[in-house]
Length: 120
Image (cartoon, rainbow, N blue to C red; front, top):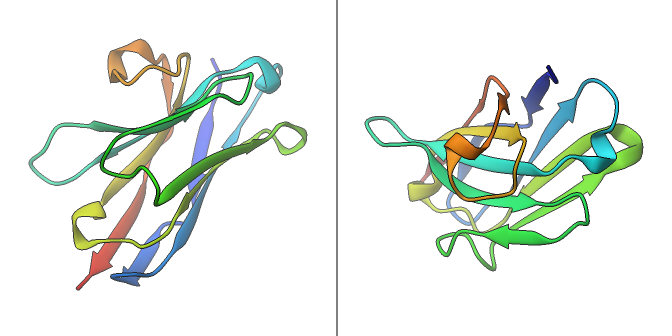
């Protein structure tokens, strides 16, 4: 079972930027599809974006043009660059592996999450 550890969350004002990182343990990271999800209080976990092992990316409409996912296979790390943040982006952000679909049940390993808070 791969272990995932997110970091980089914090508090930022609207319009600001944050970069989240997710480090994966184990081998074969370069062949893993990775996804980012978020969950706000009282809401279901929602898809943010994903990157396949071939580096194909996919984004939710709500973040398209503002968020960018990238990966560094040498560091076993996937990144979520978030620009032009809005208060509605406030949530706990999770990385996951096992798929690059937009459904959380397609993924088999999850990180513990990192809090992102955007104030107006």
